[in-house]
Length: 124
Image 1 (tube, rainbow, N blue to C red):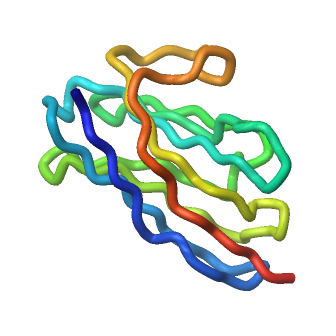
Image 2 (cartoon, helix red, strand yellow):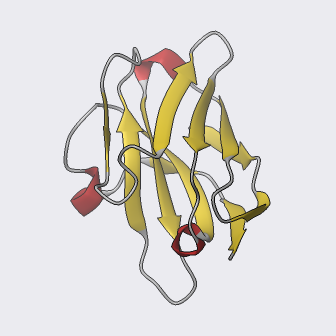
């Protein structure tokens, strides 16, 4: 069973940056694809982006492409979400997730393991 704990959320002004971290335990981190999702107030959960087990492949939702970057450090069992040029509509609870295999259908089917989320506020 993989446990995921997110950190780094908080309040930021529009146009600012924030880096979220997700620390994993309970499994061999380098064997898991990792991803980020978010859920805004009154909205459904949506896929943000994902990274392959080695970090060699990434892909993103269209609305964050060019602004957000996912990276991972397998030696530290940690995945990151660097968020730049934040907009008020990016405000949400951000969830880290892990999956046993890297796929391109997480938007539809989700991932195997989930963290509890970290809250991001963006003021205009």
